[in-house]
Every structure is written in structure tokens, then in C-alpha cells.
Length: 212
Image 1 (cartoon, helix red, strand yellow):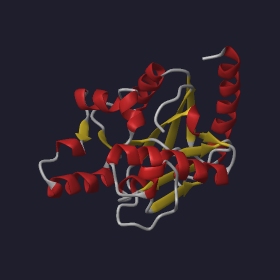
Image 2 (cartoon, one colour):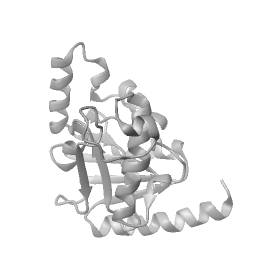
Image 3 (tube, rainbow, N blue to C red):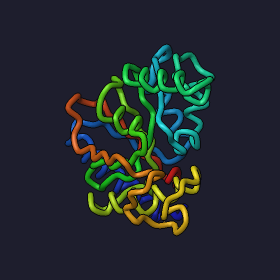
Image 4 (tube, rainbow, N blue to C red):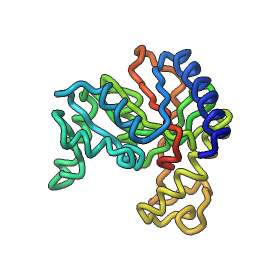
């Protein structure tokens, strides 16, 4: 990465962290995926109950894999034998110590935007788990709330559509039409502007393009 972009991102990252702190959240800034993984594991004590929502980011930095191999009690939906077991794991996530996820966008002053289909991810961010740990690449930073919502709709959602192949306009065109079709991925919007519980939400900003 160009040294000027690195410097700019570091300065912007510190501004975002100040914004998060003003919103009763906790922020960290690292330069690489490897540093992000190390910091995440420092924050999660061994023997913690850990769950996660669908997130390419936590897989890209190796966090999901590290939790499954480590000394943790994980609720891994991928191992569920059927829908009933999967649902039980999703419900157990609300009582876990750490819920791992990312953000679809974050503003320069620390407001977090997420869009969800079934809402297991956004509902856990909003309430339940004792701690929420988000890994967020600097590629997800938007100027303000309007820009963050547009990023979530027009970039994150259409790329997610390529993962899941729903019968939606964004799957076919690459852009959002605010559709109301049965396969829509954009059912629930969560805007996190403040944490009622101090430092419950922790964000590790990563100076790399990870997730989408």
C-alpha cells in the first residue's frame, strides 16, 4: 500500500476511534490482518462462549478458524446437523460472551451500519451477547450516515448476492433496487450510533481491504 495512503488511513482511523469512544464503544487500529487476529485473540479470554454471524471478514483474518481450534466454547452453525440444531446455536449466541462479526459500513465519526436478511446477526449486535467484536477493514469507511447506508446497499449487498445466488435484481445487475422480492437480502437495517453498555461493542479497524 502506498505510504501516503497508509498515513491517511492511520489519521482517519484515529478519528474514527475517537468517534467510537464518544459513542460508548471501544476502538483499535491495526495495519494488517495478522495484527487484527492477534488483537482479537487478546480481547477474547480462553474458555469464553463465542458465536458469530455470517462474516467474510472474520474468516479472512483467520479468527473463526482460531476460535474453533482454541480453548473456547464455540457455537458454530456450520456444524449443525439440521435446521433445529442450527436455530438452537443461533439462539445460544444471545447468551455468549463474545459475538464476532463485521460491519457493512462505518462512518468517519463512528456510526456503524449493517443490513441483514434473517436478522440473527443484527439482533445479536443490538442485544444479548456480553461483548460484540467487529473486525472492519478501512475499505468500509464512509463519510457520513447517508453514504454508509448507500455503501451497504450498493456494494456490500450486491457482493453478498454473488455469494448466495438469490433471485434478486442486485444479483443480476450488481446494484440495489430496494427490491421487495421473497429472496431479498435486505430485510433489517441496524444503525448503531451509541452503546448503552460501556465498551460492549469493540471495533478493530484494519488498514487493509478485507470483507465487503
